[in-house]
Length: 235
Image (cartoon, rainbow, N blue to C red; front, side, top):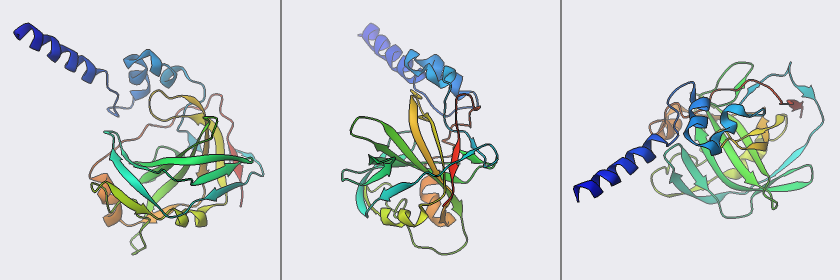
């Protein structure tokens, strides 16, 4: 019996040691060392996030349409962030192709930086097309002292379900950065379409703290630009 218990304990310790986290600034290499499936985290040529810069971007005319309506989401704490999962047909349209909203989640602080500056938080709206292509709509979250209406992101964390006011995102559509990159978590798969909006979400500290008390510094640092082509489209 003791031998069996020791074997089980060793397996549990082994599994825990191979579980990725946000422990330090060398996490990309650490993730790659955990599992051969995570190799791209270290060797990939188009890894996300990156620093966004108008000076380093290519000007282009590029329109996306956001087709969101207020919707209920299932709230899940996956051990790395708070996810809000949707089941209905909210979608964005990129180059006449529909990408359906699967979930949104949060990072504290932001993963992308803008002209070298990070924001208090960043929200990622993760979409998938019918053929499996991923597209992520990213929006920086900034703090304000003003009382403002809630997007419904944070107040029901821990309650399992929330009404998210996705229709408010429509007002933020317009100018944006656009590039092809990767997932920002293992396995760091590439060929992900990224859209980062110029307009930001403003919340006050009392709203954001519902998330930050659960997660601090759950972000991946920016990656060196290698095979990336960064574009910017004005309004």
